Image (tube, rainbow, N blue to C red):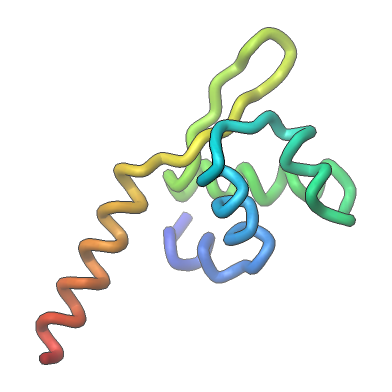
Length: 86
């Protein structure tokens, strides 16, 4: 999955903002949306496939966290593009 395609959806961007505050399980993330939990899970899978979030099983829960390495690479790429235009 392309990182930019994953970032193009406002729901996925909101999930990333939530995860900026700290790691969350899928239920905690879903509580911030009016959509059903399977839809939120679908968005989480897209973010994970794009490398923007990481997931780790903790008992019966899956805990999601930001993958700051990939996000930093995207920011650096954008900044490089801007410098080339100047």
